[in-house]
Amino acid sequence: MFRKMSSFERSTLRWSRAAVLLSLLAAAFVCLQWYEMHEGGKDTHDLALEAKTQAERTKVLSNEMKKQADYTSDLAYQMKQEADHTKDVADRTKEIAAQALVQAQAASVAATAARDSAETERRALELSERPWLLVKAELASALTYDKEGAKITVHYTITNIGHSPAVGVSVVPEFYIQDRSKPHPIVERRRFCDQAKSMSSMGHVVYPGEIFEINESFMATTSDIRKSAEAFYNEFFAAGIIDCVVYKAGFESKTFAVGTSYDLLRILPNGIHASFPAFQDMPLGSIYLIPSSFFPRDDE
Image (cartoon, rainbow, N blue to C red; front, top):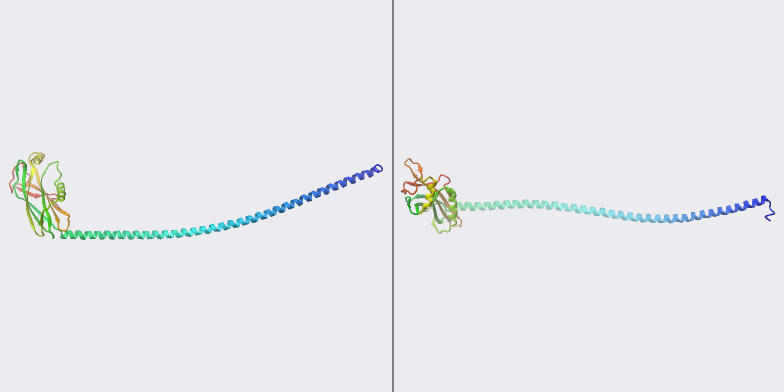
């Protein structure tokens, strides 16, 4: 039959077949395009759902974060309130401490004033009621020598001018021969009185207004006199008397002392006071005890 067709018919048939084939191919392409669009729409829907779910989760997380932020803000506010309260307490405590310090200082000042007042009253009572001894010394013998040294006697007149008895009254004298190696008489007198106050002595009792008299004899060694004379080119020697009268008040155990320094001098016919040669007897009336010109007495 195909052979009976003309060339035109055969050509037309061929083109018809080709057109059908192209139509089938176009239909197939359209189907494939539709299928792809259908599947793509499904994926897009799934993605949209997933995006929606993610958005909802993000919103929930955002809400939780906001709640956490609000909680943190509330906590920070509470902490600030607590800090402010603590600061107020600290400030009040500081003020209380400052007031306590001021009160303590005032109490200390008051206690010191009270103590000072009590000490002043005690001291005033002591000064007004304690015994006070007035000491006078005069030579009672000539200055003589023997192989041991120089000897002399001093007469002491002691008067209690205070308001209570003086107990344990003792006279401690020293024949003080000066040379370049010995301390000044004032220094020696204070050392001598400190030593005398530490000595325990029964002594005498001298009542207020009473006069107590006693003679004290003492000596200076030959070696001390020779050393002093050598310091002054053997023309004279420097002699003096240091004494310390120690006593106590009847109402307390404190020891009082009256220390005095005297120069032992001769008086020349023209009235000038002068030293005298060593190892030469000096009769009574030719030498005198004269209070030292520089701080002759310590009275306590």
